[in-house]
Length: 352
Image 1 (tube, one colour):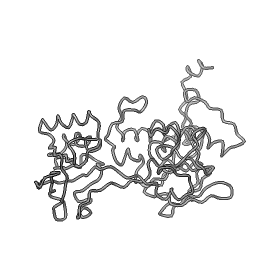
Image 2: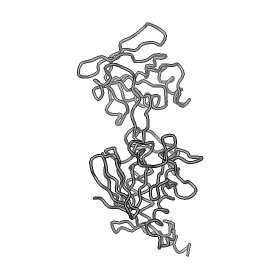
Image 3: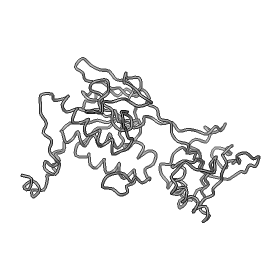
Image 4: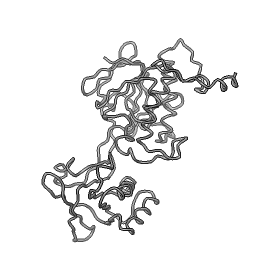
């Protein structure tokens, strides 16, 4: 049995930042995530994609943001149960919870914070008869390491931001990059569309529209795809090493949807007037997984929600204690490993 003060389900940016805010309150955290590494979508789906709306960072790669968050929470020594999905929850007589994963690992905590992002994801797949045969053998639904495609021939299908952005990025990595889309118009950012058109004019991207991949060919590994033009009988066979359909991901709450929580449009309803608590006292939902009037699905908003959640959790765990908040510029940071990052004396003196 793993015991902790706050059990966080989801190790994405919001869950990781919650560890920091809890640590300032000297509350211990343990995180559960179905992925094999912390970081959520930022690590698993687009680690090399730049993010522009994190305060203090004009631009930061998603993977670097996760690395920075992991460094920030290091003094608070969080525990991790990775590669396992939170499956069952049981509320005990004292109001605490036991959460069991799909692999039988049991966790006990007085507070549960669900920070599962948009939930678990399943890729939207094209309707091709032998698609499953080539999964992990030339067909992929996300790009984890762009270097894997160095000097390879790659066909990407899709018309959204992911298809456009990865086509642009891989134009300088792959030996040949082909972008196939069912329409002449794209759904992605206008700037990205213009960059793809510019790279096409320079001969660095093959752009085929309106068209779709209609067949896959090969033995143990994919060697070619057939591309059919929409509304025409013309087809062409294009040799390739990889086919990456980027049609988006379908989010699902998974087993959490059966925990008795109030659900609204595949998200967990919370009380945003105070602390982002759910309809079950002691269970909170923060980040993209929650829903309330005016909700914005931004990492920044998740950080804010995590901060207020931790303050509320402290009061639930220690109802007889009064916590006086101190700015880190005054109080510094005291880690569970005994380390102390003190505020500069000059700053303390000026405030006093």
